[in-house]
Length: 543
Image 1: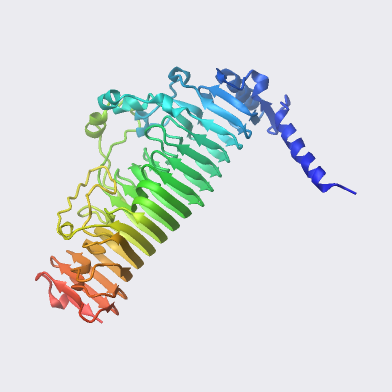
Image 2: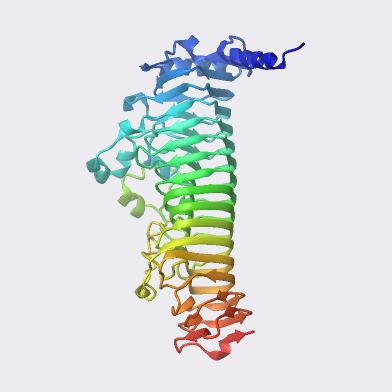
């Protein structure tokens, strides 16, 4: 009788043996065990040269797998080669050296604003094809060993960046795979992929909150990217798409990820000299995030177009949704890598990009709880509105606690300010403050709070050609209004509910015109609208 269990056990054993044996043959199926190149897994010996010899030999023989068996391997910078897989077996740890001189200065051939950031990395690859980092082992950056002083940071922020290596930096590469690996404790950004094509990041875990700027994954001006099944806990943005040079970031799919961040969980921008196009985030969970769960920020001249966010659950975030079209206009100069000497030079001495744009965004099926008091915002700047945004099937519960005086507080424009959800202070709406937006559709929006709120649920200012459908929002009995429409035109409000007495469903202000009310449901003592005396009755339609 054949023992199937015994056969299965032997098959697993034989598979492991294939990795352990160092093949000296050629071809991409060859395995190069770093132990056979002199690497010592004692957690003390610096193995940079041994690991690099294995990589070079692997590449020289046509490619294959550079194999890390269990143990701790200290290393400085290692340089990937085409057709090489770094495979860290379960129990193997590639540990970054704690000595900065073990990371030689490596400047990319591509000029971007990241020239100002670190020029050192633990793993580096440029101009390569078919490279992979796989396995159930761990990459540990020893990030806590690279703290910089407050004095240095204040004297020159760019110099302080260069004291902290990235863990993985991949530039202008094609067919890049990072799979199943665990990455922890980065000194700087955990992973930076710039001007790459065909990236697949699948099933990795990132836990890095030991230093500043600990972004989990930075996708910078890349095309055809798939990020899936990842678990990221980061000190800075968890997954951030950026464009630090005038090249697009496009055809990006992010799905089935769990994200937590001391900053933003999912962000497009802030760095946005190039475009963001054809990008999708779906089926993700966000928790314990200090700033925004979802942040779309275009401020450096690029164009954001055709972006969708769908099916996201969120708990405990400063803000659920933050959308900003601004004009920081931070310059980028492709042919002069030495132009950025400090922040003043970068901001004042280089030509600034033109005004960017944002349109065709869909955010749907979002559930968020324990969201901070500030509120969410969707804002452009005067004469440059964000356009054609749809928010549907959104349910958000805020901590609340806003007072009536916040409703009339002046909200500055701050066109060139660094974009962050708290940039305007506590907003005049507990739900969404929308300003300088055209073509905004909000449908099936359910807003609530845990502490008493005296702000409206929605505040529209300079919003045009837009619609609010099926708004269900909590409010205090006797509150002034559920929605404020200020200096806005061509707004339809339909199928909204006010199920307790309230002063009015909508407050109309400052010449708002062509406002239509269709099939709204409100309590008998509630007026459908009230005005400040600047509204023409001919500009209001009720049906």
